Image (cartoon, rainbow, N blue to C red; front, top):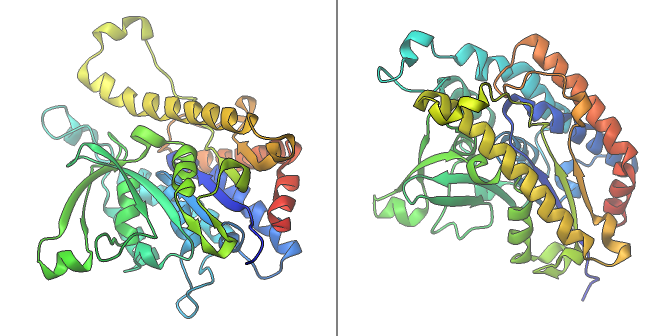
Length: 354
């Protein structure tokens, strides 16, 4: 029997166009690892990737296989960053619904049409199935039919659960008041044979797990990583890199009068409140877990997020104008500087040692 190796986990927060920030960090991570292991990509150095919303989209890009080689990644980390820089305007700004159509009671509070996003996801992923992704993954959503959290995973029994990647990513990014819920189907073989596909109506996983690290940890604890000779690993047997999107900068105007806010005012504020609160809570929980480990394992968990002083971009996670994208690229570089100063390279060397 071979040596048991630590399971390497990457977790990516939600945050709309702020996905540029983790994408910038991951581009550096891939390039650093390639210097020591030429020809490799992110999927070669992590055994499990978890993502919410924009982090889910990044996860799908990193784990998409080549057409001719199902074990190698089709897209580089640089191409993932490019996707956000080039397509952000189409996903958000160019999809904005005119104000007169959004009058409360005449239509709804949804700010953006999902058509451009759906077209981009179909062009990027085609009919790729979640079971075909290179490595195990976990992508979050909230199932409105069952009124419960739901985790798309790539190692399910495909006779019971199977989904197009494009539908998974549309689901995890359906942030309330931004995009309408995603209506998708479980296309598992037993459903097709019975002509009774499971219909789902899904919301952004950020409503309960904008930082999906604790979900990734729990899933890994119940997974057999055969390639690592590591079944149901404990925290001592994991490397976890968790990357945020620099949230928390949203404004809550006129807080003193919040008891008299209108329904529309609450509808616009609640998504940011929920997502930001869950992000901080999970970061605290993970830090507490890893503080209980032996001293030689304390460096096995690294949380990276944009320092407060460098959050010089719009607080609106849907603002994909060229000026804000430039600001986010600069914030990504500042976040990377912070990460390197706080042990990123040493952490990556640990991944290579494993």
